[in-house]
Length: 371
Ligand SMILES: Nc1ncnc2c1ncn2[C@@H]1O[C@H](COP(=O)(O)OP(=O)(O)OP(=O)(O)O)[C@@H](O)[C@H]1O
Ligand SMILES: [Mg+2]
Image 1 (tube, protein in one colour):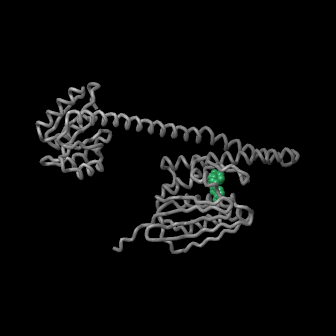
Image 2 (cartoon, helix red, strand yellow; image 1 turned 90 degrees about the vertical axis):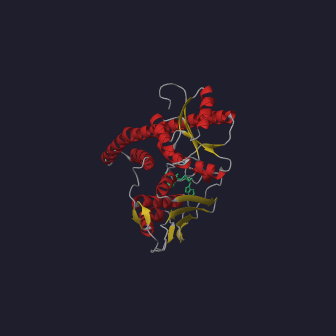
Image 3 (cartoon, rainbow, N blue to C red; image 1 turned 30 degrees about the vertical axis):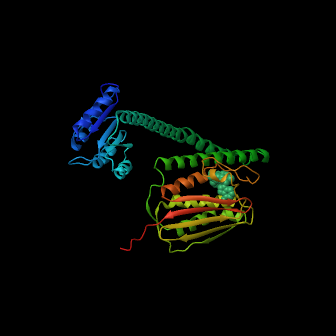
């Protein structure tokens, strides 16, 4: 960036003196500060020291090619707009340059106007890019502050209140009549829900800032599924829902965090049982090919309306309707999605209203190279 004045700083790296001078004249007249270099090493040194707003690099130069320079600059000064100057027949190189991080290319010969227009456009693009980056940083910071707020300001008092309530319930056992005890029971249930919501929310935030699901070890999905089914057995039994699992023991291991994967499955089985009428069925099946393990969790429940399906992974989204018998935070699937993404996997839902829902989990498996 032009450190000493407000003029945008442009660097031209080209071995042709006439071209350097020509560009300099045009761009200086437009109010930019221009520096030039006749070859790659000198240009890179200048770029690192002065951090220009925009750099024009000639593709064909002795010693170091424009492509190499471009590659280095796109890493060293990522906020700088890079443009490749190419000869007539180098459209392929221009494409390659763009893949290496160039913003655009300028075919030779070019007119002063073409140079001016491209420079103006490039600098505007840079401003927008920087603004977007700043906004994202601000958003991330807000989110981080919010997490801190939730964890410190809400969670601790909530735990304390619940503990007091438990004590109160014990005292109430022989002192209050049933009406009051019932009200207390409802309060206590609501407190529990609130605590769960805060925990869920914190989990999602932890995944986002990378402090959750950190372990990366070989995990057997068959044992993950078995654990999840066992954990959810009482819930399913209560609702007379059968769980059928067809999971081969010899599935290849996936790399990941066993505990969080168990929670993905308890969430899915939880949903399947929650949104399925009594005596319904949940089926878990597995397919495998050379690249992926695919697991389907299918239920015979109320299904999800097609127009609501795209939103089920959004935090706090819940389908409203008569089927809503159990309360929930609407964070379960958002949590599952984050966990699956942290395992380089995917989660997808398909559903038919009134017939049932299938959740498909896809895990990549390590590809055998035959070595
Ligand atoms: N198997 C399913 N059958 C029908 N609807 C489902 C199913 N799974 C999810 N849904 C719908 O998607 C919504 C979002 O699911 P999600 O698990 O994220 O939240 P929740 O179950 O409402 O609450 P939580 O899981 O946080 O307790 C649910 O409210 C429900 O409407
Ligand atoms: Mg749920």
